[in-house]
Amino acid sequence: MAVAPAPYSEYTDEQKDIIAMVRQFADEQILPNAEHYDHEDEFPTPIVEQMKELGLFGVTIPEEYGGMGLDLTTYVMIVEELSRGWISISGIINTHFIGSYLLMKFGTEEQKQKYLPQMATGEWRAAFSLSEPEMGSDVQALKSTAKKLDDGSYEINGQKMWVTNGLRSKLVFVLVRTDPKADPPYKGMTCFIAEKEPDVSENTGEYAGFIVPPPLKKMGYKGVESTELVFDGYKCPAENILGGEEAGLNRGFQQMMDALEVGRANVAARGVGIAQRALELALRYSQERKAFGKPICQHQAIQFKLADMATQIEAARLLTRKAARLKDAGESSELEAGMAKLFASEAGRFVVEESFRIHGGYGYSKEYEIERLYRDAPLLLIGEGTSEIQKMVIGRKLLQRNKI
Image 1 (cartoon, rainbow, N blue to C red):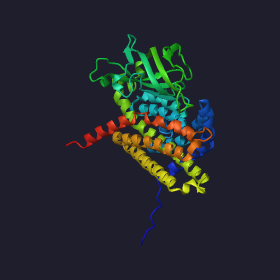
Image 2: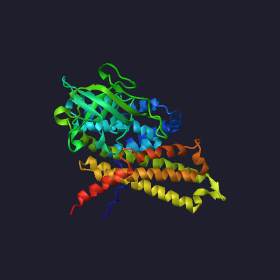
Image 3: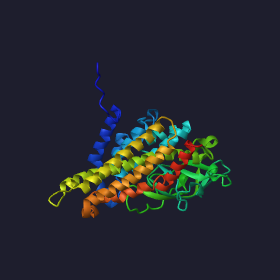
Image 4: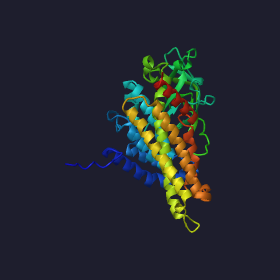
């Protein structure tokens, strides 16, 4: 007797419910307000407060610490939906997510108990600090240092760059050099959990020496601050070394590179999200706009564009979810996360630009949403490693897996 096949679904029942909730949130709260916050370059406090209520800051944090305990695959689905609304919103939780990932994988139980419950509610938010003004993609060239003092604490000095949530965060997971003589250099780097006061530019008291200069002015990715960080004699207790002093000292490079795997998956999801929104705008505009006596969507040239856009989005989405599922399965996803980040960020740029072209002159006007997307998309080509760096990662991993 033939059995009817089950209907195809990309989502579990739980994922369907969560994605429906986040999409409704994006449609009702993010999309109607994104233009205002982008234009004013203003932090979207009311939206962030609602994100707290929805539990979005604790999506992957285990339930025992107050989070939802969901997997990376579900998280990238959420990021896609938030980025479809506005990638700045996803940026507010992405670095926070990387911080919680570092704690969950490498933190001591004391560190988890101290930080994760407050992070799960979004009351304490985290930032992730790797880049420096002169470092670029060469992580081993970082100059920031931490020196152990007679009282057992560490004094951090140096300057960091391009820190999302740099001002409003409570915690900054910062990579610095603790053994300047290490060869190769990456063996002498440590990740510290640097605490500070949220929304304070020049910290005093126990956080003295932690300075956050005014936010950097950017072409896009507005509303969420990207800052420098200056450490000038900032003292950090040894117990704030990620994983504790015994297990974590000089292990920071490996910890940060592991976190970049999941970071690349969520940047890929952001590429899918912004591309999806650009396609939606193009589909709507091309059916409303008429030229040469018919809607422009009936012209073959426009249909070809729409076909290329939709195909790239679907491919990017599949690559992103494969990378996430591999990580959830406990397997290395460095190759797959690099592929997903490379393809999805480039697809995001391509689809946004094609939508911009379909809009014609109106795409250049701030009256149309595509103008904002056109300014936001280039960020994804740089964050969590440039496209060129991804190709280096992919090439290296391919040779390792296929060594003769």
